[in-house]
Length: 311
Ligand code: GH3
Ligand code: MG
Ligand code: MG
Ligand code: MG
Image (cartoon, rainbow, N blue to C red; front, side, top):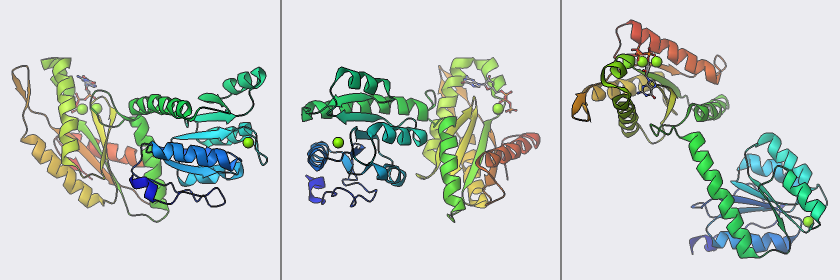
């Protein structure tokens, strides 16, 4: 298959934070001082379509994860440079939600209980059956992905969550401060939506909210992303976009939306929104400040009569 043509990573110091097999089902970082375990697990997971990083020195874990965060870490317990519990602490101090599994020869009951009480997702004893181990890891990843999806996507509208916006904003802002291209945010608030609910009911309101998000998702660039900030409030994050470009894009969406009719249970509805647009300013801003300013501009749009975009 495709990924087998890519040369496999050697055990560190060769590991450089990049993984083989980019079209992957997930990234797995394996940390063990035993090169036989490393290559056994590496090929087992690569054969299943995962991309795999291997590391024989736990002192390099933090660096490796920072460079390219994996979806799960398989961690040996007994290693000469640093034991697995120490390594676990380092991972969790920075990546609280990253799944970690111990794989260890320490099979005594006390060790097993100690392991399960640590913040790990499984405690697997060597020697292990490779197929069973792969299945256990797949189960953990499946559960974790389900959870992640709930944290990242708003269940009603399919837009991203506010929590995820905070994460993405931090990243976008950090990238920008390092000298990256400017980005803009737009704060969108549906006009008179309380009246809409009061008149047509919450089911119609929910339907329109969903349709609104869908409409916007279909109108934006692939690199743009939409977040549900609150009830009928949405934020658009537009990387590599100046304030003027962002304003024009949102203005275009506003015009197109005004032509759209929503149909629900035999009724036809039209909705409008007001928006504020703001470009990030290096040094003058912080991630939350950009949102506050876009929100303020949105309020100015409301004051000026709604159904408009203000910068
Ligand atoms: P404005 O033009 O000033 O924004 O007026 P508005 O009525 O849209 O603003 P306000 O913030 O007073 O009300 C927002 C309303 O949005 C309140 C609530 O009825 C509605 N809303 C918020 N979340 C939901 C939701 O999940 N489903 C439905 N159906 N309605 C929601
Ligand atoms: Mg070991
Ligand atoms: Mg509102
Ligand atoms: Mg509103």
